[in-house]
Length: 193
Image (cartoon, rainbow, N blue to C red):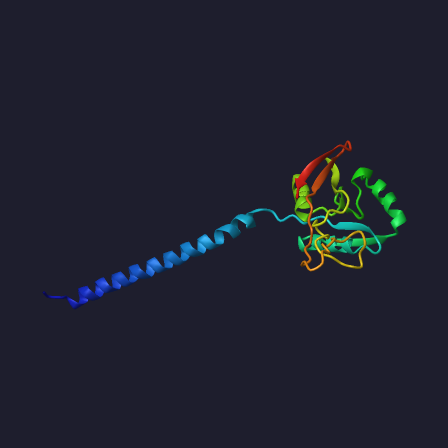
C-alpha cells in the first residue's frame, strides 16, 4: 500500500477546508436562527405612545401605583393632583359615564381612561383605534393594576387583606371587566380579567 505524501496532504487540506466551511456555515445558520425573531420586530414601525395625564385626588396611593404600572409598560405619565371636589368636573369634561366612575381619570390621546385599566388594554385600544370615547374599569376591583398590594394608610383605594387570625395574609383578587365606551355612550366588555 503506497501513499503519495503530496496527495495525502492535498486530501487532508481538502478535508480541512471542507470542515472549516461546515463550521462557518453552521455558525452562520445558528446566528441567522437566533436573529430571526429580532429582524421580524425590527421591520415593524416603532410608534411612540401618546403621553398620559392622570387626574387624581390627593392623596391617592393606588392612583400613583397605577401610574407606575403604566410607566413600566412604556408610557410617559404625568399626575395632576386635584381636589376631590374637582374630580366630577374633570369626568364630565372627558365625557365619562357616571355609572363607570372610579377614583382617578386619565387622558391618553383622544381617549379617556377611567380607573385601574390594565396597560395591555390601553395598548390594544391605541393599536386598534376604535371609534370610542375611552376605557373604564368601574369602582376599585381588588387585584387590578395599582390595587395589587396593601397599604394600611389607604382606606378605600388599596387591596384588602384577609385578616383571619393565625392564617397567612393573602391578597384577595376579584374578576373585573374593562369596558369600552362608544361614541354614543353605549358600553361593551373590551377585556375580562
